[in-house]
Every structure is written in structure tokens, then in C-alpha cells.
Picture 1 (tube, rainbow, N blue to C red):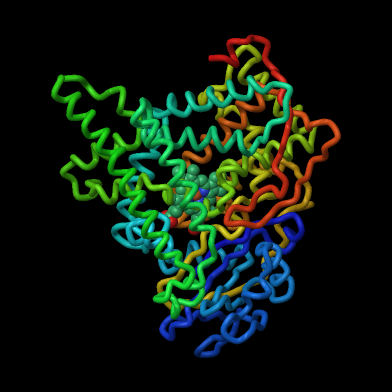
Picture 2: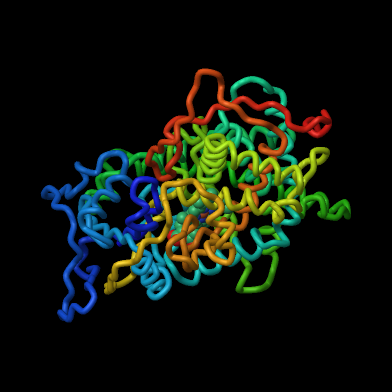
Length: 521
Ligand code: HEM
């Protein structure tokens, strides 16, 4: 069984803000039970849903825009419905009260996922945080990821690494001043370099390191292509042994490649550490990156946090850091979650000049025209924070979240929820300013869940939150952005594992600050 969320979208936010998707395998022990309020039957019926065809179910009717299709079905079948996709049954939940039942009241039951076969093969048998079943191993890895790698202290320590990559991005924009720039592409390169640098620090510098970095990027591209392919074996587990499209075979060979690159990068670091120890040098300059944190944990004699080399590789693997990326065009189109959100926020601001003026005013006041944005400024940027939240509401990057899979049969009691948003299709960041105590990213409001909720809430949230506002504040503070003459802003979306802008945002930057050194340092 799987389960995920469908967030608010422009057309039908009135209906609800969130849809939960649960799918069940046809396995006899695994049945999903749903009762409407007051139903007293011993075995509650499955929820209603569209009829499909024998064997393939509703697959031929899904189309490419899954989030629109699910909205349409919600209009017909209500807050909870079922859809057969091949041999698997998905249940879509479409109201905050049902969502609460799943991620709060029955969170432990629904804290699993149904990994695609390619992910199982390419990630040490699903040993990464995203796909590990709920249990001891998942808890341990998640604890290390959240408390050791992404703790406030670790993120503060690694600020210089993020800053360096951001400054490089700003210099790049400055070199192209007055010419059209693909904003998603710019954000993608900046963010991916930032993440690689957080993970590996200086390991990817120098000739040997640069070769490994090139291999990393090639590997990432191959992984994207692999995960983007719909696999017949995932929809028809009975056919998995035949591996009809050869996806499992390809995943195995990518996994070997992955192993070789990771082994040589880690080996380089271990040799460096051994040499430093021999020469009696300290390791302070290496301390900030995540490889270093993990290698130190490996040395610890503490069962709660000590970690094997395989777990280190799983934690540094692409699936942990780009868990939502499955599209092959990610490298050219910049469609990962954080990149996509940079693009949407910039597009909404360019579409709403008054909001853009207010963001600029706030940056001028809080940062100043003779300074660049530092992370210490970010907590003061309330209006920009509200703009980002409002953009998540209108354009959730993961409209289906990451599907969940319950561990046992379960009964949900559905009730009709009242209307949630006033004028839901309107871009109005003020709604987040006025309601500042509520509606954050913590997943405690079941009508606003861009990062999911409960035990499986996005593990990268602290980093995503910091990087998103840092990149946006810097691009907006240092430049004015205009559309190329004769072009129009397009705000339509295209469904994918990450739902992104249908047309890439292309804009022309001009400098906003007067001192040259603010662009060249
Ligand atoms: C705008 C950026 C991002 C968005 C909107 C986002 C959203 C999400 C969502 C909706 C989920 C599923 C939550 C659930 O099942 O309730 C998720 C899971 C996850 N995300 Fe993110 N994410 C973002 C960035 C990141 C980053 C930068 C990282 C890595 C540092 C990351 C790592 C993860 C991991 C490891 C999981 C799986 C957690 C688990 O199963 O325990 N995410 N994310």
C-alpha cells in the first residue's frame, strides 16, 4: 500500500488543500478498510472510485497530469476514493481531517513506503532514509541525518561552504548582466554545487577530485533517467522476475558505478586523514562537511549513532539528497524541489510587481544597499518568508508528497471539512503574515503540508528552508529581474514527481547594488 499527498492547486483549492494517496497491493492480507461516519458494518467497504479495465485498472485513463486527474476524481468521488493502477490499489485522501488520521492518529501504521524496484537495487536494497521501512534502521539513519548532519550547529558550521557556492552563482549572473538567463538552470547549478560541497567539502577539488566530480554528475544524470522510467514490474509485481524493460539490470550496473565512485571519494578522504594524523596536523579545516561528520561517527563506540560504511554511503547517496528527483531533464531543466521553488517564487514576484517592491523594500531595510545577504539576515525577512509560503500553497513542488504504505489493514473515518482558504486562487502572501503562529512547515496544520507531516516528514527540511530563502534573498537583493522584451510570463505547471513550471522562467538581471565588489567577491 502507498500513501501520499496532493496539495492545493489553483483550480480546486476550494475543495481542500491536501489529498492523501494510499495504495494497497492486492495481497489478501493487505486490505484497506474505510467507513463513512456512523457506519456500523463489521467489514467496512472500500471507498468509491472510477472503474478501470481488467488487469490494467485505471492506468490507461490517468493521462500525464496526474494532479489534475486526481482533482477531477475528487470532484466526483469526494474526500476519499480508490484507483486501481495495474495490480496495485491507490487510495487518495483529500481532506485535512482524513490526513490527520493518517499522519497523526495512525502515523506508525502509515509510516512506510513502497519502493520502486529500481530504487531498491540502486540503494543498497532500499537502505536509504526515503525507502527504509519504519523501524530501528530507519530511526537510526534518520536520527543521524537530522541530528548530526542537519542540526542547527552543523548547518551553522557549514555556512561558509554554502556561501562560497552562492557567491560563485552571483558572479556568474553578474557576468551575464543584461542578457536573458534561465532562472531554474541558474538555481539548479548553484544548489547542486552547494549540496555537493556540503557533502564532500574539499574532496572534489584538485585534479583527482575534479575527475570524481565529473563522474558524480554523470552518475546523477543516469540515476535521473533510470528513476524516470515507469516500470511495468512496479505496477505488476507478478511480472517482476522477467524484468521486461531491463530496468532492474540497468539499476544494478548503475549501482556498481555508484559504489566505485563513492569508494574512491571516501578512500581519498581516508588517505588524507591518515596523512594528516601522521604529520600531526589537526582536521579543523575538514570538519564542516558531512563526510567528515559521518567518518567521525564511525569511530564512535556508541550503538545509537555508530555507523557502518554502507550506511555512510546510503546517507551520502543521491537518493537521500535528491529524493524527489526522478526526471531525466533535471540537469538541464532544473526540476528538483528547491530549484523548482526558486523558479516559482521568482515568477510569482515578477507577476506581482507590488509584492516585488515590498520584498525589495524589506531587503533594503534589513540588509542595506551596501551589503550582501548573509544567513544572519534571513530571520528578519518576514515578508519574503510569507511570499515563499504562499508560493508553496499555490505551487506545491510535490503535489502527491512521497507516497506512503500502511503496514496493516486500517479504518479511516471521513468527515466533510469546512472551506479553508479565502480567495484560494489569489496570490496573497499577507495571509501568512497575519497568521504567523500557524501555517509553518512543521506539518502540524493538516491544511498546509508542503514538506509532508508526521514521522516521515521531509528529513531535509532544515536545509531546504535555509537554502531556499538564502538563494532567493541574494538573487532578489543583488538584481532587478525583467522579462525579455516581447515575452510573456507563463504560470502553468507540468506534472512530474516534482511538479514544475511548464515553461522555464527566463529573465534579464540588472545590478541593484552600486559597489562592484559586492558582485565579484
Ligand atoms: C523545497 C524543497 C523540498 C520539498 C518541498 C520537500 C518535500 C518532501 C516531502 C513532501 C517528503 C515526503 C514527506 C512525507 O511522506 O510526509 C519528503 C521526504 C524526504 N525529503 Fe524532502 N523536500 C525538499 C527538499 C529536500 C532536501 C534538500 C533534502 C535533503 C537534504 C530532502 C530529503 C528528504 C528525505 C531524506 C525524505 C524522506 C524522509 C523519510 O522517509 O523519512 N528533501 N520531502
